Image (cartoon, rainbow, N blue to C red; front, side, top):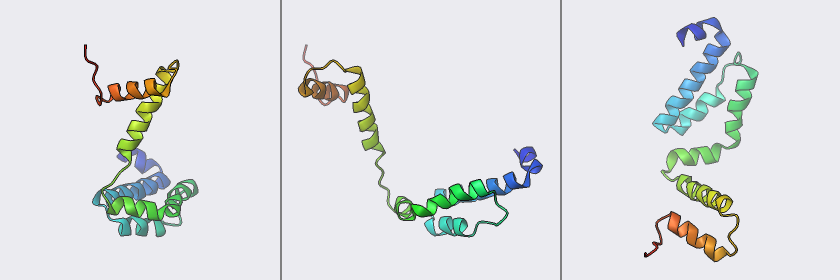
Length: 113
């Protein structure tokens, strides 16, 4: 990695900014995170700067993700599972049958043999 960074100064500068943002993200320090974004060097690659500055557009949401421990990951996982079951079970005639399949898949309903 050091060899690659020594070849191109623009790459090295972008990498250092990226690592600094990761550090602030890990420490959950939204003030330092956005201070880093607001004080980007002028010599930074324009494409990289544009993608980093895009984060400012979502500043409130990102700040909330730093401050609160909540995530919608589990809900997104359930939605994805339901979509997969819908694709697999394309031939189900009724919603009731599809709902039962989802419950069985999630161990919310058991079939007595």
